[in-house]
Length: 142
Length: 142
Length: 142
Length: 142
Image (cartoon, rainbow over the protein chains, first blue to last red):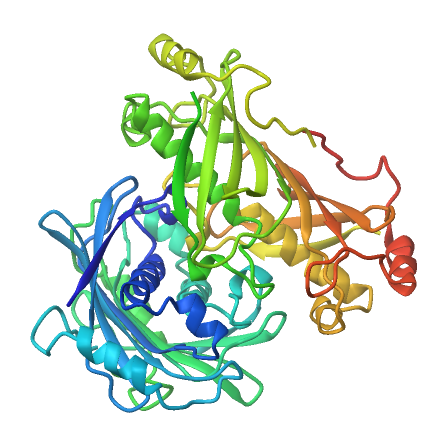
């Protein structure tokens, strides 16, 4: 099931073009991930304390329109079925009917030292239960 | 011809994983673009004042290893032949023989109001003169 | 009357010391100001469109403890009685009974070109109606 | 002896007011500190690895004019005589004859767990040798 969070655009997130800087959407995607992990009953802070990290392997974004200061942006994420040690999440950021960006991140499971490893089975089960099928939500390729 | 800049990693650019936050590489790519435009004799600040903007249409990055605080990172960019109103730049960030990330951005030419338009012929000529052929430098697809 | 907002700490806001980077509190203070202006019936985005800006003249912060990733931080602001073209706001960021920082900003009213000018009388009236007396809330000097 | 570094203003550091966001100067001050510690023969990354941290206890800044994208800003720092476990550094950011801001930070020495402790004698000696007397450089109080 996709999850959405509402994010109020901060002044510091704009640049002199008058819109949100293009790097900020990745920070918002991460904000959404934090809420997603919490919703699945495995807060990311606790995962890290237990030695499970999900660093970003790939990131991508397609920009359609710039979000503006003080707008309330809805960021939605779609977790995809985990494949081996990897999991992909797709995102959309929008306000009412205007889509600002669509993007994605791919994560690998590592330990605290950065060594790759399998996603623990209970996490795989939770990710699978939450995963959206291909075809639902955005899924850009770049 | 590719261009490189050396960037000293700032403390504020790290996160609690002890490495540079994944969104920061896009800021470094932009830093490199600024130097690239200056080298081509068309500082981006002056282009904007003249009504020529190159907002980001697409961005992508593949992460191999995390850069660390106080490291001196070499960021290199390869401009590609402009196609219509678009231009792509590929990037690599590395330190000595270790590659941290490879990425790219695609830009469209717009005016101050965000309306798309052709890249002025003199800029096209400068971009073409600087462009690296496909096959030189990284060129990831995601 | 003071105003509070709850801010969820983002991963990107931490640094390799494992706590929120000290510059981030100023971004949170600004987030609180945005909500404060909205509460007073004069959204800052609209003020700017009408030619009224409140750039920061002075900022200060005293750090007691570092906020951590995923914590829900309560940021509270106390507007002080405007004096001439200036207005001061004091802040506290805390979680349950732990105070992370106390800080302040002083703002001047300018126009879009940065020229100082008087705060329009209707805004002065709204700021006065909202102002907290000296002695209420933090008020650090550095 | 004061130390200066030249910092090229990044696009991402501006906000929609068209100038550098007020929180960014603290990141530049930190950049200067990194170079200062290196100059003193004790790179901050190595200090941390050895268990010596200097987290920020207080920060302050007075803003005179906004730095602009692509400007080359000279940031200068003046270390003050350490007092007990604390050390203060004053800063100025300027371009040619225009001063953008003056600020300061106060640091305490702690260990990795955040426990305060004395500054090791060899570091005190290095800081003292580098310290500028009161009266040299800016020294704002807020």
